[in-house]
Every structure is written in C-alpha cells, then in structure tokens.
Picture 1 (cartoon, rainbow, N blue to C red):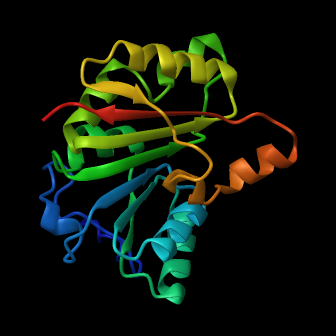
Picture 2 (cartoon, rainbow, N blue to C red):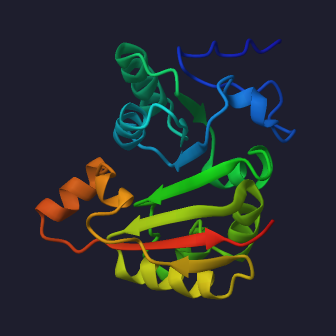
Length: 207
C-alpha cells in the first residue's frame, strides 16, 4: 500500500527530505534574519512577532497537527508571508534539520519541564542539544529561554554554564528591544496566577 503524503496547509513548510539538513533558501525566499519559535503551541507568540517585525522571517516549530493547522490558518488570514510553520519534534529540528549558521534567535518558551526526577532525561536542554544549537545559530545569535518552573530553570542554567559556545548575557532592561516582545498564552496565564517567570538569554560564540 502506497502512503499518500499529507498536503501542506497554507503557510506550512514541508521539507522534501526530512533526513537531510536544509539549505537557508529552502525556508524563505525573502532574505532576512531568521528567528525560530521552538514548540510554538497555538502560535500566538510567532504570529505576534511576525506582525511586529515584518523585516524578519519566523519559523514556528510545533509537533501537534491541530496547533499547526490553527497557526497556519491565522497566519494566512493575517497575511504574514514572513511566517512559516513546521510540524516536527523540537530536538530533531535543531539537531538534524535546521541549516548551520542560519538562525539569529531561537526562542524556547515554557517547554514541558518534566518535573519528576525519572523524567529529567526527557528535558530538551542538555549538552547535546546546546551543542547542536550553537551550530545552527549565527555567530552572536541569541538563545532565549523562559519557564515558570524553578527546577527546570536551575537545570537549564547549570547546563548552559557548561557550554563552550554559549555564554550568558543580560536579558536587557525594560526599555530595550526584548521588552517589546509579546507574551505567550502560557506566560499571560502564569502571570495572571501570580507565578514568577524565570528567563535567561545566552549568546553564541561559535563561528
């Protein structure tokens, strides 16, 4: 029985080969700085970013088909040619698919913290992931991470401290560019509930 590939949603990116690293020109025809929203959920953050920064390209990476379709629909309705959606697992995307030295900023916002000790090995941030991340970020590129889970924040801080290629930098003050970044749906929910949001920013030294 021959499997028929699922047709792409409007605004969705379907790689021709999932087992070969992409070239930069495959993602967008418009040459512009590329930002990746890894684990984009319902797409609210990526959609807001694409509206706010039309001179940048945004790739939203999400595993769940329903969320991918919702983001694609909203992007099409809003007329956002600088936003595309990739349905794929986050770790695989960074370690095996994204072009090297292509991403100016990668956002990892409120990923699953896997709070139980026996599940910590499932956490996305580890030495292998950070090594792969340093290869796909441009020299001087940013890794931006937020979580409401104190344990995961401590874990991520410890892992980043061991990295040879990523080093901590200031998130910036309230008047800086990052202060204009939209909140995710999770962040708005956590803040409304009075939870504290932990955040860190690291810069890529690899070149």
